Length: 243
Ligand SMILES: [Zn+2]
Image (cartoon, rainbow, N blue to C red; front, side, top):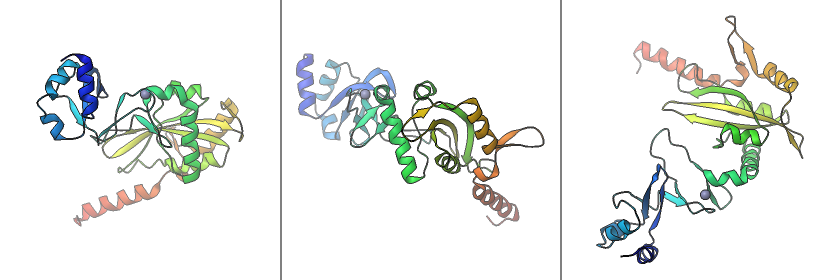
């Protein structure tokens, strides 16, 4: 079977072939159901298209980029999984293609954060955010199930929304908590700017306090103390044998 026959067979059977999003050095196939895999021609077609017939996925767990057609994994497979794409208003865009619409993606996040009051994780890296005039303001904050993990991204967002600051969160999930970085830029309503050192110093004073050992941490009003209190109560109950 030659390549064009193989592509025709794949098209007729609704099979998508492309780079594996988990390992771009390999190709993979996306199929609708087991019947396609059991078709006697499937293996021959895959080999003609340089795909290992064992490297397949199902179409309810994958999609393709609306811009470049690359395969995108849309289904979580572990606690550390994060979407590596932007599902905007009707179109799905892979991480690579976001490079061409950074400003639209950032605006989309900011608008939704303003509407909902809830932080939304952003998949751009530091360099891309700096292109959009953001500076990394705070890194390695923690929100989770342990006592000290009380940094509250929602409170930081509320602060930014009332101080003409655009705020972007990069989130790094782990099993029982999330570490997050906060990026900020000034926004006058119709224009945005990189924050000046004076403005950054003011934000520092508003958000942080220094404890007796000289360690800087987020002020209590930007911490979700309920999480801490809930953990404390649970630990007390455990020590009393109530669990
Ligand atoms: Zn793409």
